[in-house]
Length: 311
Image (cartoon, rainbow, N blue to C red; front, side, top):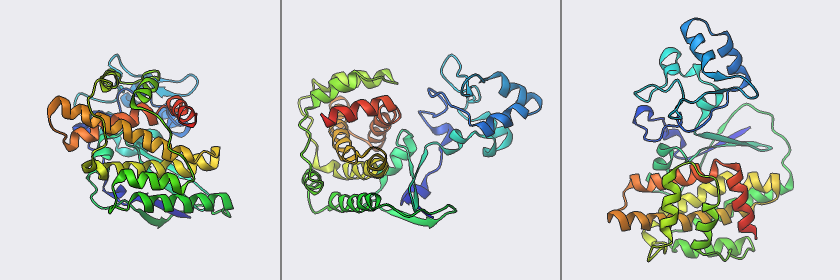
């Protein structure tokens, strides 16, 4: 079976204590069955500590403390489990995050979730158009269905259009819609903001910034941001075009969600410029991280956005 990853994927590594938004805080981490059984059998002081900080009913998970931090995240923002036993001590979610995998008939596609600040920063640092790296992995290949092959070709064609840097990104987006036989969703930024304010949120600053967007004098996408936008659109198509197309027959969602996200990202860029007069790589990565954490990592939020964009 073929394994595909974005060309920047091998450069990723967790920045551990240097991370400003640890994935070990604010998220309830479910523990897979194999790890839960291993934790039940762990001996000594570590075993006692594990069992006292795990909620075992229903789906086992670590109980966050009063500051919503994992009980094994120490004051230096390092994991006590890793310090005690190495990365092999982690449960599956902790070991994988922010990586994700999508399995198809003849391939597995892996990527980096942009809710991780280092993954977002790494994406935005790429100067050349994104591409895929191919390798072999163990796994049974199935005969691909025609619908899958069609979606695979369509996605490649969309990437080609969106990475044509001789044209402004907004022109490329129009061509992408045309290629799919789609009409752009007629929405305004204020409509998008109203939709997002009605969804569940993680961080107070997110909704505060959303409310501030309506007062901006200018939210037009700037051509100097085209590379950021190109990379974001490529990434959204990579993560959603095949998966939503095959499981839900909603491949159109990927392009619509990409354009929706681009409009929002551009407005947030303008908000930072208005407040500080500059826009650093860290600023851009932070906007991307919050966008992903608030929207991509809530199934309810994604569903609500998909319904709104289809209307």
